[in-house]
Structure formats: C-alpha cells, structure tokens
Image (cartoon, rainbow, N blue to C red; front, side, top):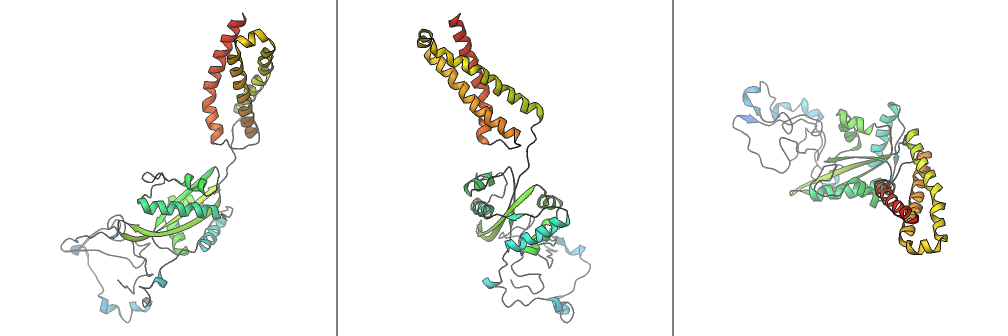
Length: 318
C-alpha cells in the first residue's frame, strides 16, 4: 500500500494489538487509526486499539487535504522498489549514540567487528526460532554463546533486539523514547559495540531483525578479607607439601600406602596450582573465569578427600 502521507516508505509494522500479517476483523461502527510516523506513533497497533465511531468528532477527508496538508506528502514513486527499503547504517548509528553519550559525560563506544559477528549470529537465530527473549528460551543460542563463537570475551555484555526497518536517526529516537532502553545504551560501563541486521520471515511474514551488542569491563572488588583467606589457604598448602613428599623416603611405609600418599600429594599439588592462579588474579584486580569458578566449586570436595586420606595415613603411622 502506497501512502504519501507517511513519514517514510517501508516503515509500517505491527504492534501488540494489531500484529503483522494477521487478518483482523474491525468491529461494526469502529475504525483503526494510524499515525504518519509509523515507528513513533501511538495508534491502533498499540494501546489505542479500535476506535468507536461515536468517539470521533472530527475528520478531514482525503480530497480536502489537497492544496494544504499535501504540501508535506512524500514522492512515493519508488516506494515499492527494493531501492527504497530502509537500511540501517551501523557506523552512523554509533556516531549518533556516541554524541549522546558525550552529552551525558560518558566515554565513546568503540566499534568491534567481533560483536558485529555475534549480533549477526543472534539475529539469525532470533528469526529462525521467532525467539526475541534475551535468555534464548526457544533457540538456546544466547548472546554469550554467540560472543564465544565470534572470539569476543568480556565481563559485562548486553543486547537489544529490535524488529523492523530503521534508519540510524530513527533508531536513536526510538531507543531514547523509553527510559529503560535509554538507560541501557547510556550505561557508562560499556566500552565496545557491534550491530547486525538479518532479513527473513516470522510465521510467513517478511521482516527484519536488528541486534545491538554491547560489551564492557568493570574491575572486580574482592575485598581484603576474601583475598587474605585465599592467601592463607595457599600458604597452608605450600607449608604441608614438603612433609607429604618426604613420606616417599620411607620405603616400607610408602610401598604399603603408595596410592593414598600419591593421591594426597596429587591433590595438594593441584590445589596449590589453582589457588595460586586465583590469588594472583585477585591481587591484580582480574575477574575469575569459568575454570576458576569450577575449581572453587570442586575444592570443597578435594579438601574433604585430602583430609580423609590424611587421617587414614596418620592412623597407619601411629
């Protein structure tokens, strides 16, 4: 449908009340109303819904708009052409976003092609599974997975998926229209940015998904008590290790208890190696990674096993 009075071609999309590509039946003596800005207008597609004829007190017929209101109408000659399809300029969007961030005293974001790649991977899966949830409840393909496959790693990340066709200026206006999205894109902890678009279909309806990916780094604050407790653990393990290694010098005892002695030494060596890594990261204000966290979960069991074997060997000595 060609509409000269709309703000832009290819800019009409469904909403919560009137969705895309779904046939609706308008009740008798009711109408739907659509604004000229099909992205920013609050109209029947959203909370307004159907409008009863009895609630309308004034209209301007189409033929009466000519000669006055039509001076702002667009040239719709190419509206149905592929050339007129709205395309997002990611670099332009970032320029506009960084301008707003600077106005708010925030640092500029850097464009990262790895986040562009991860955004593209997420956009593909969002359309494939019609799953716009950040948790990827249907697809199981989260932003974290997409970042990992794209070679990007950071401690802070976030995503905004958007359905529709937007120019850079429109998208900025739309995001600043809502307090939640405005707060998100003005997060001072973000450093990196990437964006991707992907066209496809949702339930047989042609559409496009835009995915914005953000990443950043915030140094951890472990606290002195936490760091000191890990230091004490490391010192304690290093202190007892020589004594356990000396048991190998007692040939008869070691021969009879070899598997237990070797296992205790193995546990102590492993714990020292892993704890040293954790202490070093904490002292240098670095985040622990997944392997560190897995060790922390595992260490309680290792400690119990070490203590049980120690008691068994002490009983054998006595």
